[in-house]
Image (cartoon, rainbow, N blue to C red; front, top):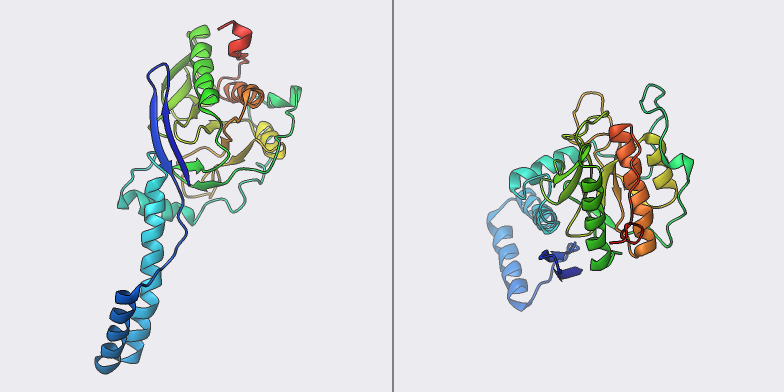
Length: 285
């Protein structure tokens, strides 16, 4: 379980409980007595096939109930936290990526022709990958960074937007419908309204679009994984582009600088222009 209650000097307050409960069934004395009476009466008045069906139905119903509440606990995202939203996500699960670490296929027709991170490869991320669950929303449930890292990341993105305000803006994420997003005013590769990236105020991770070469780099070095719906089915239109990835939350200031390099690469993919991001230390803030 991850529980967070955050307050900040700029007025941002976060209160979140992000938890994925395993399926468990506990029977106390009254429950066991009721179950025994029910089985006895069922054997007397129902056909054996009906009893077998009902016994098989109970764990299925418990699993669906548990899965639905886990879906709600992921918090607000691009899909409404309703039964209709839950059914929609389970439909998309049928077509989701089986391996989120599988790189994208090469496409020689893409522009820009190459990614940005190949010019200065990333270091490997220390430690194992964090646990990531869900589809929409998709959330990182452990290894979250500190509140300080998250607030600095937000401030860096805001300053980056102000520094390049003729080409880059800040707004609410088009993909998530929640959280702060960075947008290209004149996108070359159009995403959702030109969104470059957005940062989650729950798990501090980010979603963004990257050139396939850069997707391969962040997967290889352990900084990200592909979104489950970032795939091509041929006939079913997915709600996110195939270049869509989840970049793990930075755990310290050094990782924050690496994440900023990845955001630069996201800007390169969306705008086909390179804009360097200054960290707060470099910008003197």
